[in-house]
Image 1 (tube, rainbow, N blue to C red):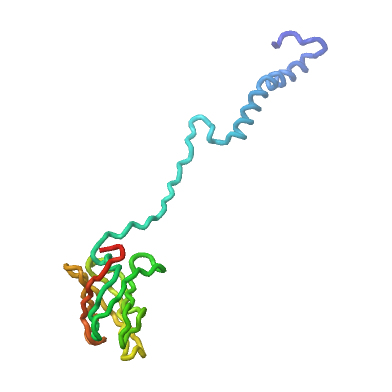
Image 2 (tube, rainbow, N blue to C red; image 1 turned 30 degrees about the vertical axis):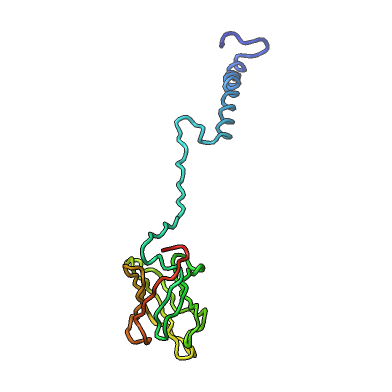
Length: 185
């Protein structure tokens, strides 16, 4: 304590050494605390809470409801003006969702086999309607123009194709009747 100075030390030296003795007792524990805080970070402090985890939302496209206008894939027989024609309806894989392409299977005087006769997609608001474009070829398939058209799915499962502007292409409205199915009915 502060009693008599140790041998060889004067009273002034002893008073000057007191902070050193106190520091030498405190320093190791203070250094240890500083070391722990420096390497542990703030997460280890008592009373601290970890930062909130961020929720990552990944958009997922919901499957389309199975309505009448989403069941057109397969083989159909149509009543074009040149007589019945077989067509096959497929889905355009390059586009997302239902994007129908109807291609002629039979050749006729106006439409060669394999030619696209209709392209369309289901109407999002009307469950039995497909909106698209009908190919309207000239005699001999010399020129082809496209006109706005709709396919209506009837109660009996047949389709009625009608043009948006009547008379743009002769022979409409026409009826489609299913001959076979490729997956959907």
